[in-house]
Length: 312
Image (cartoon, rainbow, N blue to C red):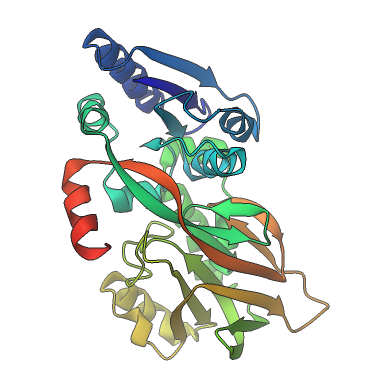
């Protein structure tokens, strides 16, 4: 096999990058790989441009060494370039929610085993406004803003704890803001004051496992959660319910699944930004839809069985 390796050197710890390089050497020495072509990114959109230039059949797979944002750039490049090249993700970022859900390995031995097995699973992606794709999540609101307050240095040094520290500032001073939105889907309409909305392809978002408990990566549906601004006394019980995956029954939470939806702000004086896969996107309004089986992802043996059993 031949592979392209795209590495974001500013994402996460250097040992994850070493794991990828060591895996390529090991697989090459064993004759599994006949060529591994390494390319580092130096600025934003480099990973997208590299993936966009990949031609059909040029590589057997492309490996992404980076965080959610790097993986997002690569899936956009693969889809828009039309190569349909399978994607192998080595999660080297801070949250890596999608990779955590799939149980993707970070060590050299686990990575080699996954590549040798070469279990390729078709995976849905979300599409925003007909021009951008997201692998795991699009979100907007108070908690979404937290991610963009954390510096790259803090992310690298502290990992996801950096997000928790930043979020704790808003928690202790109770700076939760809400905004009036209109959500339209499946001939339904919801008008609510919310402080957070999340549209996801997997259950894992923001370091929380099972935040969207019904989500599956190849069911042809987007999972949506709207959280109304909690009263101060509601915050701790809501967090506990999220930990126990019982929060979708909370009176402040609305949860549904759909193939497409639009979200707009009902107050023209308010500008509400959103992000996808942790990267800043545009501002409301926007339309999101699911694109079934848009990409192919390598998964480890143990996860393949789970996917076949629950998501076929």
